[in-house]
Image 1 (cartoon, helix red, strand yellow):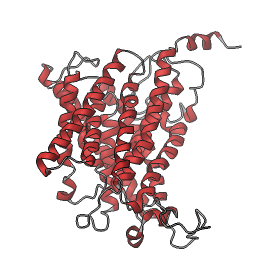
Image 2 (image 1 turned 45 degrees about the horizontal axis):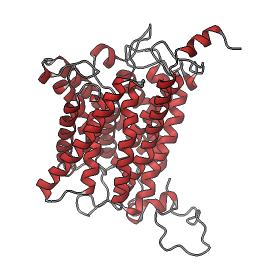
Image 3 (image 1 turned 30 degrees about the vertical axis):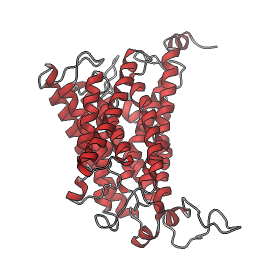
Image 4 (image 1 turned 180 degrees about the vertical axis):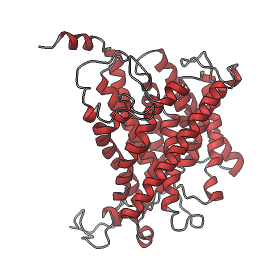
Length: 445
């Protein structure tokens, strides 16, 4: 027999809100295979499986770590001046098993924990795009596991954990007052800055800047981009945590920004290069979605069009910076996610409208420079923290076990060496086994 307290808690759960967040969580999960296809199509055919495995590996490792300690670090009661949650409060999701919601939620708390964990999954998987074609799978798994604890969980606490009913949350959300509805800092800037650090540690691909390194399958890229857009509605609108007007507004602004980003990037390519490409269209779509992630609740639909267009234009320019400065960001995580995240986060301070659900006004809407300053502080702090700590983790992993495959294996094909498989078995031998044909020779994990 259930207790009166459990009955009261269960009564606070709204069936509609719960159904929406269940669907939104599934949409965010779908972003993982969408990202795997998007990234997998962008690399060369000899490393497509490794690229996709880095996403699926991150999905598995981060989920386990999030359940054990990540959620507690991010959303437990603060134990360090707004810097970190109590790692033991919700160890292995302890305390979240009752069939009800906290007073600030209308959905089961355990569902909220799962939803937030999938944000961490996507953020970690994004980092892998910067080191495509050359990373050891085992080293990547160690890196992303430690990164979840030391980088993402603290940043999520800063940005997403709000004070409520005696609970003390993170400093950026509560003391600074940054507006970041779905993760421009915690997801986009954090992943982009982390990616830059790891790319610098691991070094450039063999032939970078000299050999053509074109995407091997643009059909996969387009399919992956479409799945990412589909999943992004769960990512952004799901962050409302309710099936209400805010979720509807966020859905519309997400739609607007994605479309505007696509058109802006394509127009930039057409003027600059003479051709509008499928890769450019997919990249522009993602750039627009990246920029609207923090700002989806603070912009009008027209503002979302402006934000998406700005992101498409700026990111189309930014992806070329790696050739100017010599860092090998294989799949433009820095150019799209770091730069797009900066555009979206800082842009709130310029074009936010108090007619939108967040109720804040940017500089161009008469709000002065106050909110702009808050957005700049959050962007700078999160970017610097993620860059430094991710770089330290990458250096330690590299020295302890080697982060990069041997040069000869990188040139010959990382899929065959690391996973003993190839993506396209065009010359299969009758009766050959599907695995194990390399034995223990020349294997790298």
